Length: 317
Length: 295
Image (cartoon, rainbow over all chains, first blue to last red):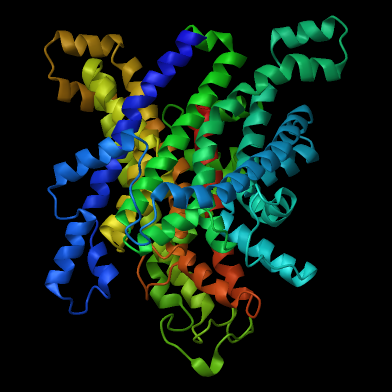
């Protein structure tokens, strides 16, 4: 297992380097000039000397390769630079916003897993029944309804029926865990709905396959209770594909968080990204995208490790 | 078993006409056929949209702003008195154009790179697949947002921003087929008689990947429509005044409690189309290649 972990870790390094390099060069061809935006409107007359001084101060006058090497060196020391808009280090901005996004994503994973696994199992066990048709329709609807529309509908419903509107200020999970979870419950449903649908579909088809395997028949013929056959023998193998798609689904949850945070006014890293783009804050955007990429790579690594742990065949390939 | 039987029934039989294949597809996969029909209606609406809108979707009528659904305005009016139905009809044009455009560009580029990567093998394959790993490390919408910030808002740029993150998926599927096809005896025979690699790729490998290409394309269409709506929702999509479902929803947020119909109809349009496209894609996949069920 140690060799497997090392191999996976080594694979992640060139991918990370490629991703941060791509995002650096992508951001450098950004139209518009942050220095001009900081000094006023892009279209208005601006003192060229003042503009030049600011560009010098921000390091935008240096050659591109030099900017790249400095960025890469700083990045290797986990320094993401300073926001060109606020002047604060990108890390500190991320640290302030991260608890909101992490709580939101974790809650949506928990909610979607609690919905998806039993739904997929029941749907498979009652194949082609009305329950199955109902659960499958829920799964396909989940894939089709955009999370931002679901978010809007949930807001509309809670305001009209329960007179609840999103808080002006959100609590962090570190300061007030219960309040934070309460406030983020609705956004987490809007965000996790799609993942619940995808995992339920995957769980159903995987369970259907596994239940027809010989070892399940053997377990039944030994006289084991149906519950034991399902939980002990079938579930462990049926859950493998659900674990595999987890990495991909986390990518979608991060994408979804950008929109859900905008709708519910949550001060997370998704909102920070959208604000960064609106302010032409190159450092913030590239720092954030690099940070998100690290998170994605770490999650993919963890998914691979869990997969290797659950299915020993994977480690030896 | 039922799926397998339907698959066997729906596959082309010798001497069978295209019409009877379509008829059998409707009989064996009714939900998929309905999905295809709904998508076809969307394309027709997108083409003839400007001639069938009850009102000019851009003309404002402040006296009749925020009117609820009625016989005069079936889906009500927005904050400046524009007819919502007319804007939903014209929004189909943007969704169809961007959805189909981005899917074609992304899937075709991914498939071509995949064929080359799979056929070439060795270092070329290794290098291409590592680049795909890099693109896959970005969440799709985050990369699309970054690309849109770089390129600026326009229809072409939205298509490009959506298609780039979708390249690796088509690439992986088509590459895996190319890797196995290149070992087939007739491909080896073509190599043995001195056929050039490009000729082998386009004459022998590409035709084998077409079914997978179409399955991946239809499965990506729904996602492309959703990402377009998401970008427009964030203000990074098609620039105003072109009506876009995503931007309509974003604008509706300000009047959500006063005029809930503004939030309902564009969202319903997106959901119906994506649902239809997903159903069609699923049915097509079941018929052509049930092995790709987990795509």
